Length: 181
Image (tube, rainbow, N blue to C red; front, side, top):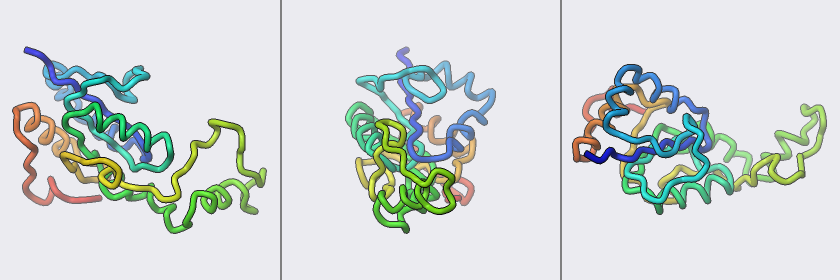
């Protein structure tokens, strides 16, 4: 039996969704028998593969790198899951949107009076090129499954993956499976 290829991606977020994924504990051993992890911040893989069956995408789209990455991931992935509230709504990551354009954010963070150095780092690749507004994943590419929570609970993640691996779309019922936050 061919194993399902699984990717996990960490964009603009805190990695809490990945920590919740790791909280699946012993079930991860069962999962490893059914999937092959082909891309993840938990593995040392530098290039997103050509054909991925399922991708859990954590975090919002906050910079040019995320924008490029999510488009490539969507193009190469059969089932894309918005993994957690940041991916679904922007959540905490999108709080910077109230400051307006990216330049305002950089000024506030790097050049304000509270900062010791008082200047925006200008060397290439020190600060990724920020988008003017943080966006949820579905605002950029189509999403197949939404897995809410900040972070999603282990049972939510397990339910979604088990149902996908069994050939059906995830179906969630009850407050504990559908709640945000």
